[in-house]
Picture 1 (spheres, rainbow, N blue to C red):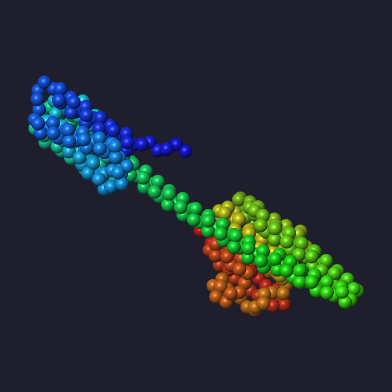
Picture 2 (picture 1 turned 60 degrees about the vertical axis):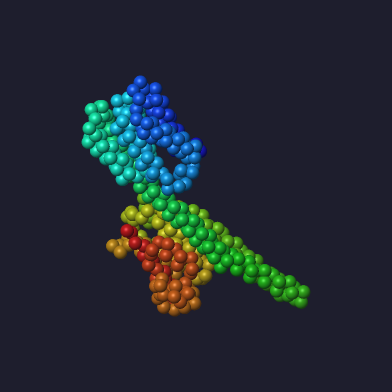
Length: 381
């Protein structure tokens, strides 16, 4: 990446060069000037060289504003006593002064410098400075406009940096939440199944030592359990895949999700929903489909259901999705909102996290022995 242009160094040495030329030009003039003027020019040259050499020190101190003040005073002194001898140098130094002001200082400071120079040239009773007045006014107005534009650009850059920082933080938070969700789902799903399998294998080993025939029966049960765990693991891995979102029609994507679940689980699914566009951003659509997929995965894994009904409808209150099954239900009875589920520590943690991320209303109804229903409403605005 190329480094930024070294404006402080360039302007520092350009200031010193102009100061040296002014002092030399005046010294070799046939008409001798006041010793005070020579002293001021010599002192300014020493100051300009010191600033150019120690530009890093200048930036680390509060001396920067005094530098602008010193350059302005120097310009006014040259305009007062050297306008006839150094008209071209005076123009160059004024442009240097404006460049320094607009690059390193704020809009207000630029306005002050331009206003002081214009007023001073207007009231200075010297015919020799009259040709410079137009340059002072025109260049000053242009630099003021540039300073205003620069301030707007600086504000836009600051706002973009803040937005970039917020987006980076939101991305990091989303990644961390997804990691926690995957870890929680894996712990509650495949990991628990394999721990159970390990315990059953240990029991089988001891049983085979005592009763081989009974051990064979248990072995067949373990084979069935292993096959079930393989299906669960495949379903878990399937839930980790990116969601196929139809940007034009979320309903069609949800219908495909339900059909895919029916094909993989063997559980009949009824899907009700219109084909009208929903109008959700693609990111929110992905979250909605992921939530639907997790709800169906929970039905397959825990409910023991023989049928599932999925409905999706766009209403004035938002996008409403429901998943109902005829399985075992949860280990609690009744209907609970997201706030109540959080307070009582009930319901699937992953679905609650998804609902919070979507700013959605979640409602879970449990009918032990007769199934369960999940409803959530996603705001469209």
